[in-house]
Length: 378
Ligand SMILES: [Zn+2]
Image 1: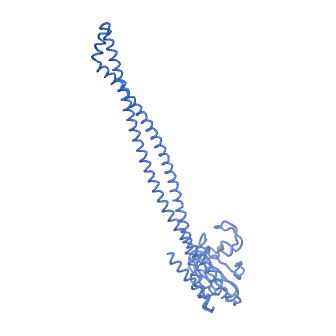
Image 2: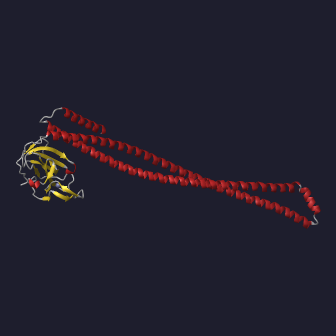
Image 3: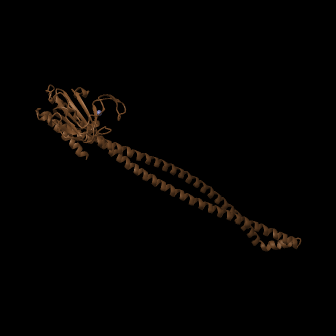
């Protein structure tokens, strides 16, 4: 598409340059007017492309802002998970220390016990005899024996308690490890989410860049076209004979025969669309869509086509520096260079351009400056 537009712009520029080289002659004015119309149509096309590109840029920028917020949230979640993982790792380290302590105690207690048991066992015979012989009586012997057994029993209980504690600590450690691996997998999911969002943002950024490049190309084409349009207008002006004879009767007929209703006269007024006071450069005649619009006086069609806020417009050159303009038309029935009669149909009433309803905006210009049409309409 862009290539074609560039080609069109180039062709137009070439046509325009060739036009400069060829000396002006009578029929060429019409050609120049046709060229100008073509350039103006191209200008409208480029303008709408620029607007579309701007809208797309806005949409993509909005999407990017949403993605950025999403990434920020995800990064925050990842950081929170990171600190949770660190906290769990700290708990695991403390639990491991407790386990080491419990195991050390266990080893010590087990050693004490085995030492005692070895003593009791190895020296059992002697001790037994010793205890037996050194005992004052059987009651003393039994007391000594019970005491020994009790000490061993306490050792065994202590070992069991330490072993229980160690097992509990092992369970806690396992629980913490499960918690840690859950946190890590959540963190990994969040990281892949962040990556996904990042990829989306990259794509959007690329699209935005492409659209911006397109828009800049359209804007460049538009500038070139506007330049061409200005040059064409200058050529047309220079081709028009400034002292051309007046072609009409000098007395204008009513340009919209179906209605005499003036909805807004020439002069300063509050513009309903621009919402400010502006010179109303013509006269608005309220008339039904499709009703006939006629040439106010005899002349030559100077220009036809879309003219921004004016919508579909016809300009008739009556000679002697006088021209008339008919705007917001729904239909244009004449073309540039065509001779028109006073009262002859040139188009139909419409509501194109900046218009709040079907009406004819009728202007009279003296050397290009708008004047009150009532001066000419009798
Ligand atoms: Zn108007």
